[in-house]
Image (cartoon, rainbow, N blue to C red; front, side, top):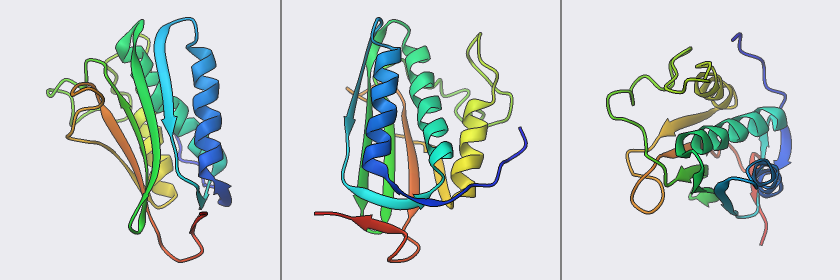
Length: 163
């Protein structure tokens, strides 16, 4: 679980998020899991491999929590001087008794889980200057979980939007 150093490059986040959700939709196509995406055109200097791993982990966790049926929505948006990627689902949500521990290394609530995914995802987001959090608000349809990846705009060159 040793942290890797990010290799920063200008990424088209709209393309990356759409790519990852498309692959994950294929992975879950024979289940009752629906994955949708809503994006804005945003480019930002981030590590491509880190972002793919983080998004895949959040989507996989949501799908595992829901079992055979549910909805996952991935949203990319720019708010003022921040970029947010939200992964929300309509599953059972995170039990309040474990909310504080879900980002701890080796903590898992899944029988098949290793307890590495959220901890490593948090480290990767942090190494790129961002923050990963479990929102207090429910996910979709008033239930489920809502994870937010947030990056602040550090300079005019770190984030670009297209019209």
